[in-house]
Length: 174
Image (cartoon, rainbow, N blue to C red):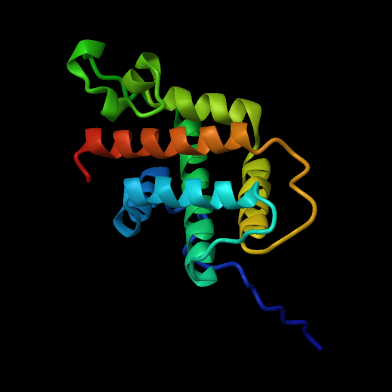
């Protein structure tokens, strides 16, 4: 008898060879706003490190956000592998500090540097583990706190959101 297994991996966030990183980024930003994504990631992070509190949002919304962030991380990795230049010739004085976000001047000029630095420090699996842990600890009350440092991957994710948005903005897709 042939064994059949159920594939619980959603087609929304799985990365196939046919999809490019840019297509995944476009899909992410069609479904999620940059400011809302940053705010949601911030609230998940803040509830994950607090004791005796949990996030008040619907768990289905948090799960959908978790899966879409996973997809964005995979898209950033695919773009980093292609190693294109997304530079722009602007002086820092021409750019509003609000547009920079957490990005440095070099990262603003070439957002690919954000992805290279993030994936030099952490693998895709580590980012997946971090996102899962953040969501897990934000949805319930637990006596123990996460065993790893959550701040550095969190900063990388915020920077990835800014860099991905900047790449799509420069392509004229947003």
